[in-house]
Image (tube, rainbow, N blue to C red):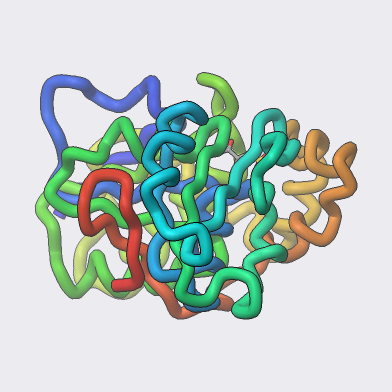
Length: 244
Ligand code: 3SL
């Protein structure tokens, strides 16, 4: 197995695909996706484009759908939910399909949607992603950070490092055999440095600051937890994620 990390969707190669793509948007899309599926949502269907979301959700029964998403962290006007994982309680999402659009996370998903296997990961379901990779042993794994509008986001790379480090610890492989690009070494070092104080990093990083200005302290706390949900979102058809 070879692991590759790409800090942003823009850095992902365009001439080939991995056996398994892991999309990461810790703040907050992939945390929200894991939480919604854990709370009983039927599926999460991701869109980078609001108009397309409106078009496709229109044909879904009204009592079985929720339109969710943000632009710049703020709930899209007229939508049922924003992108806060804390809003995804069983009472709200059970048996419903979330039609979700976000600024960066859904764009990252679209970039690798044609890969044979696509899963999403966040800090809260890190171990579930690790377990899947270790049990299926894909030859190539790309971990793709969502970043922010083309720029690198430290929280996504730290999560990719957390996954890589855990795979390393739980397999017989050495780092030199496992890493596919230098980003893996950097991401593991980043995670090692901050693993006991992720919330502090989240409060300082640019996206954390953006969310704090929108009253997002509770979201930061929730998203910074490690391995709190044993759930793995997996793509069953392009853009549609279900519980594995
Ligand atoms: O960019 C994204 O996909 C979002 O997760 C951003 S936000 O945390 O909802 O602002």
